[in-house]
Image (tube, rainbow, N blue to C red):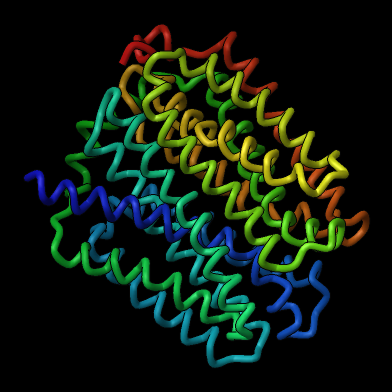
Length: 395
């Protein structure tokens, strides 16, 4: 593989994470407008977004096998067609069923690109570079989280219809599509599986993978359960307007992105299990300060701190997962990624009823409890992790 092709594939991975980040994160910004559009209570509308998360989960889960059957390039081109269909559907229909279907299609597109993006990074880079590249790739998720709430707030403040937010997100896939057309992708199939997967099958994953999977699920569920309801919480509890609420979300993802860049360098000097335990503990504490604060002036500082200290947790969990076997297993990485995506799918299934019965503050408190579970799982992982036995901590 020549260097220019590797760079193009790496940028496809970057944009794939940005696409998922944009689709997932703008939900909290546009939910109120979409609820008004369909004349539904916001708690009922939130359940409809489960279709988006279900699409992401289904695509990531199935693509572990489909990548060996359908060429990656063909998948990404097909995803572009689906993206156009979904956006046209959102713009031209007043049916809640069509809206739900379009959200599912957007989720499938997002899941396909994200699973391919993750595979490309783990396939092209190894050792220190893999962890560092994964972390940098994941920073594009938060970069989109910083940028698109601002774009959404600008459009909605000017009374531009909410579906134009999704049209703007579609521009990211245009970039993926152009890069796809001029790139050569790794060939997958029986020969690749025979070489790579056979040694991995002989080695058991161990109970550490269970702890990592629970941590990944609870982390994503806690993170999204928190950030999706922050705008509504800030508006109702502290009477902030949509611009101020959007700035809070944007601040979180800005700090998250900066944190990823910092930790992609810092993590090389620390044992991954120990540092992720410390970061999970700090994140739990800072989120508690945000949830229990009565001073709106302190919220931006708490959310900046939370974004920074929590930024490296998810990617470190995935990296630790890949290090639980002597030879890194793509199936193992995909399993932990799938567990995280289950957390995404459950976001509104779990928080919607909580908000309906007890309000947004209860949803944020639940997210805080989930972060505490992540901390406990990381702590327990220290007793059973295999990454030190395999010498991965020194990579």
